[in-house]
Length: 92
Image 1: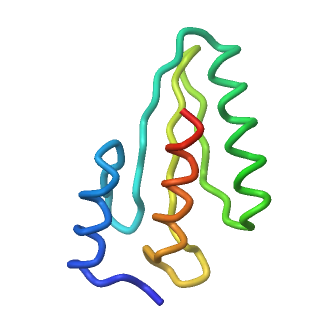
Image 2: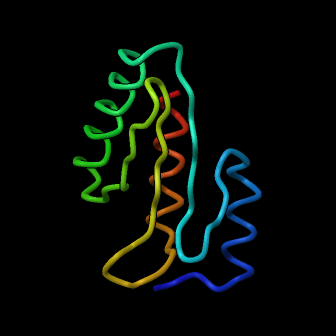
């Protein structure tokens, strides 16, 4: 079930590194080098696969990663997105 505006705002307050862009939540990260960025992306892939909830991942520059989360099957933000954001936060 999609979260309402109040639910989204409340969950974002608990995830200050994430921001909302329309129907998705986004986190941008920067690493010391390309290798560290790739290692992080691979850790995210393992967690996402286990949860069967996959972020869109963009690797850009030589050390930057952007993660986008949205529950595609519902067309909006759900608790699954914020749960996954928490799992990703624990990897940093």
